[in-house]
Amino acid sequence: MRSITYAGEAVQTSDEVASLLVELSAELAKAGRAEAVEIPIVTQGGGRDTAELVVGLGNDVLSLPAEPEGAEPDFTDAVEMLTAMLDATFAQFTMTAPAATPATALAEALAFDDPAIEPETAEPQIVPDSSPGRGDAAVTSLDEFRRAQRSR
Image (tube, rainbow, N blue to C red; front, side):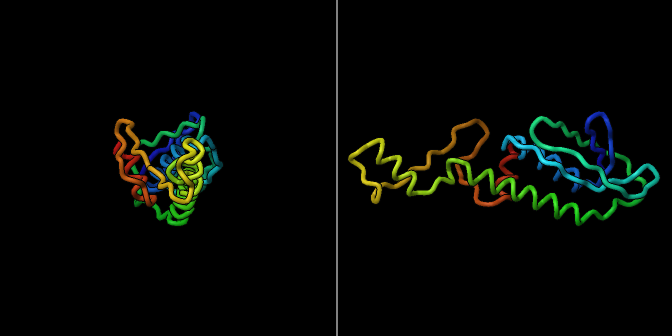
């Protein structure tokens, strides 16, 4: 179990929901966005309820270990919903990233900078990111993206 601290309040949820919530919040913040989400929580008496919160840009989410009152609940539906939101955010993020620029647009940009290069024959050059902690390999899936983010 994890305790999610948000706006001075704390709620308990499953490890997987908490992990996805923090990851979604970080990805939305990178994209300059915030979204309202509803997550399942465990109440003081061990019952189940939901909490609504806004995650992303300008919203801090803290996940801490918590002592479970019984077995960890099955929040599969929430995990699927948060994963779908994370996948959609990842897809939007990669669609707007420079590496996702269509080859024809890159060819036209190269031709514009150097009139001697014809757009049909120009090969787009992908320049490796030299930022510290980032690999040169292109990210081709959400899992690879998540691993790259965690290794920073």
